[in-house]
Length: 148
Image (cartoon, rainbow, N blue to C red; front, side):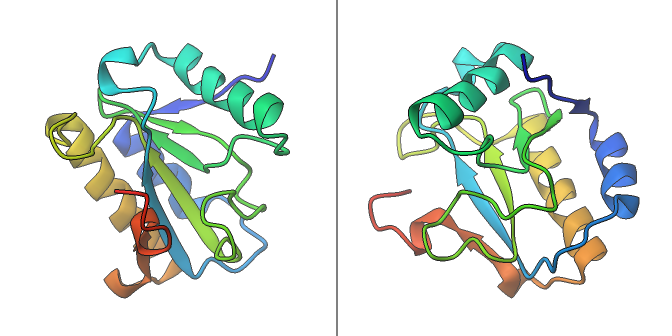
């Protein structure tokens, strides 16, 4: 069974600052789950469930995202950073993908507290590591009108 590594935000910042990456990263993709919602989060079993859905139902080679950000503010690893994400059809080359656990459609979960802090710090750490600007951050909804 596939295992995933959990980072505190500080551990993630240290990791991303020195992990070798052999491909060019030119943008950061921000996604959120519809399912699981924040209340559904159960640690690694939730990440493994996403992996199973992506690999067994969708037929992808691995979990779509490079990192998942949990409601408790921890960050889980995912797809190898040497491989493009499976996030935005036609726009994955050069991407680094974050999946934020929660349904952030209007009237649903709120992005707040430790999770929001982790999102902000993780993005800044990746911007620093790959020399990216705010203009290099894209949201799934920008490429798919059905997404929020």
